[in-house]
Amino acid sequence: GEAASSAPADQVAKLTPPSGAPAPSFSGGSMLPGVAIEEAARAAAASRGGGSGGEGGDNGLNRGRGNQAQGQLEVLSDTMGVDFGPYLARVVQSVKQNWYNLIPEVARAPIMKKGKVTIEFAITKNGSVAGLRLAGTSGDVALDRAAYGGITGANPFQPLPNEFGGQYLALRFYFYYNYGPNELH
Image (cartoon, rainbow, N blue to C red; front, side, top):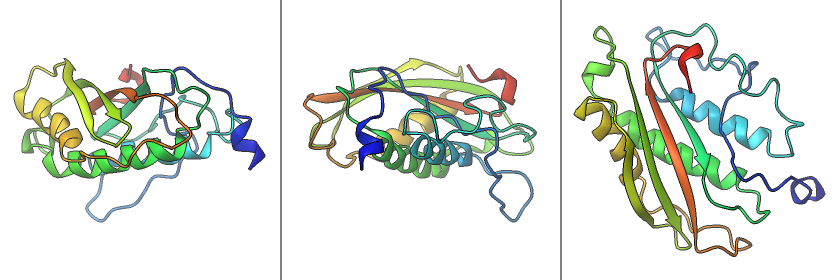
């Protein structure tokens, strides 16, 4: 409708869950690794109308929840006014599912190894991943490999939206293992 077409053409989009996001419940206690990235996708889809749909932006990101894996995403290329919210929600969901399946034992209880991995890549018009590179290592090969595999396992993604005139969409993913809410940057 008209609300989506009037959204600002943000050069950089961060996927962060609103402070009021309900915690999904899983049997077994604490939130499972990778769930926060799914919440981020839902929040991005909810707030794509220029910020009016959000409930507090990135304040209180996963407030009060302990050890877990989380992810954030930045769009590095010009979106040319195209609303990528729904598309990126699907990308994040696919990466999250693949990443979750690869998270190593050292990042799970009882060890709960901490680490941050930054990966940059582009999605081409047909949905293929190009230029995949590790932009920031966690210092642990197992954590890096799981994050990398989250993206390669999701390749190819759906083709970019038809209304997007560019040849690719450049992205930067942040994968956080066992970081507290105040440490995410």
